[in-house]
Amino acid sequence: MGHRNGQTNLYAFTLFLFKNDLISWLLDEAKGKRRNNIVYNIVLRILNINFAAIHTMSVLVQTLREEVETVVRELGWSKAAMGQMRKLDSFMKETQRLAGVGISMRRMALRDFKFSNGSVIPAGTTVDPQKDFESLRAELIPGDL
Image (cartoon, rainbow, N blue to C red):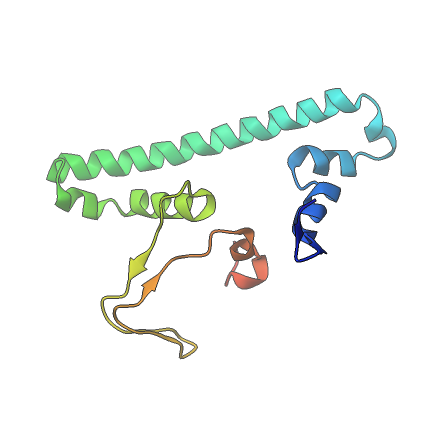
């Protein structure tokens, strides 16, 4: 545990006490008969989850591939073509927002931008989206997912 000004680093301590990963979740939910053959059952569940993730990814890859092929066929490999690949652009931005590896999504407002709640980002202001899990809280995301 780390200390800062004599106080325990509660965040690190919480992570130490309450692991927040798939295996911990599966162990926490394994009660009664689910505890029988626990290793086998957890491995089976992880394999099923991985299978679902790979299948979902293949659908996504096919969608992005179709967009790229269509745009390149029409405009060739050009700056204009890149500007037309909206699904690819959205995928790249969302990937960096959720699991960035040091590449920032920092943007500068070219003109004043007014949100529906009245908040304003003045022209010339640099913004960078939040990259931690606070931005994934369901109550902060409008509409149905």
